[in-house]
Length: 343
Image (cartoon, rainbow, N blue to C red; front, side, top):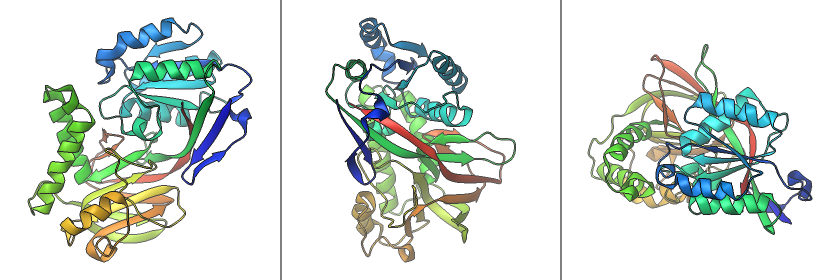
């Protein structure tokens, strides 16, 4: 079996013992039946599982049920996980996996795009419709597929202060992005078209947001945030957008970061009223440094180890709004690494 491990530097050969290629894997599948795509495709998933009796599966609809399912799968000696749900389900899985620690050794994880936006699965998951992806995954786990790939990625840890449990995910956002996320939640529920509830709808929403900014319209309210990065204070500024991620790309395939430092977390922020917005957009979305996307013009991108943010507004992790009594301090740090399977 050919196995590659991929990190942010590109694919490199890895030790095949990481996946014990000489024996089948015991696979556990978490399925969120309420996630966007799964609502229409659940029966197709079950038909695939009927053909692979060695795989176990559990339905999960909340962080509590995810934690319980992972504990049960650890007791059943599951050594590879599949997750079929949206970004929120993936975040709940990462939190339970890294915070609760049900497994003595972290199993590799395969993400199937069973949700609505599926930004995490688009970056590190298995492509295609969930049923087809599940079929390939189970065939590979049984040793009947000849190639696989591991993608090792750092995970964000988000701490909200005393009395709150940490959360783990791959895309933290604040300021205008969180405001747009709330709007997207509403439009998704109202959308009649399945396409508009998915990545296309997200693209349209973000496009309207960018167009409004380019036309100097007040499409979101500036958010004052006191920022401290790697022990350096940047004071309090008004931000249009701020996010921290370990994803290589965001939906729909954009890479809005261009930092050169060696930190594991990508930090990007846009000040309120940035300069030359229309000229900056191509460089910003592609992550290509240019004279238009500079800190002096209101655009900052760094690779960091730790960010401490003090704010009065809500923030979000993988599309899930995080509420806290304002003002609150949020700390985002490196939370460990997880191997994702792609076949």
